[in-house]
Image 1: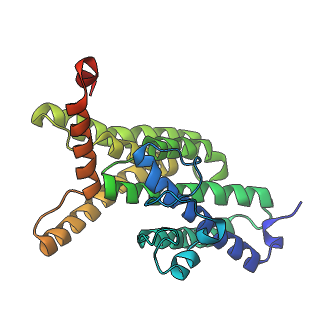
Image 2 (image 1 turned 90 degrees about the vertical axis):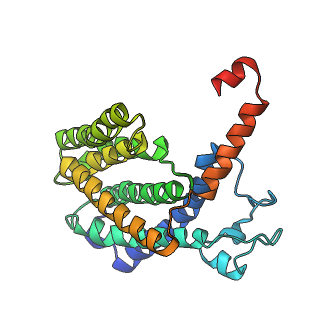
Length: 269
């Protein structure tokens, strides 16, 4: 059976980067559609501005955006720079996983085991990238990413040396509780509203499932430090923290829907 050491480095690197770019392109679909409760598989890629289908040659990662000058060919609508940025992050992620995880496997590892290891870690990284961009725009951490990522972390334990089932399960439980108990349950009783949402608890649960309880604690503390630093920078530059435009639009749409509703439907909303 073909082993990892028998595969040339240039081939592995090329495949890792290309797969990262391709899945990074698909990640843009996830980032756009998931917060809008749209299917990520149907319909196919289309222009958000006019709805025209996007052909395969118009969907080549990074290159298409550059050739089209950052504008949709169908209607000339601007294509946000986020699209090639996410694709580039996907390619960089693929290369980084190859260098730091796959090539650290025993040289006699079967090719299929190396591929599976690459796939599960790529799924984790892409999921976290999607979560970051969705949260930045919509202040939302989708269950599909947080809970799905935690389940993948538990299921992939046999592919990850140095971690056992108990580490993953206990880490997931502790990751959820260290956010839910003090910042959601207790804080709500004291102040009348949660200090952190359940999405944050599910995200630290994901970290615990992958890296054990130390990983969950580190994720919580590192996230708090990073969030504080970003907040200070924004306050220094802008003087205040603005609510994302997408959140404002979603609130306005919900209020309009409530106003238009009647009877039991209005109570439900």
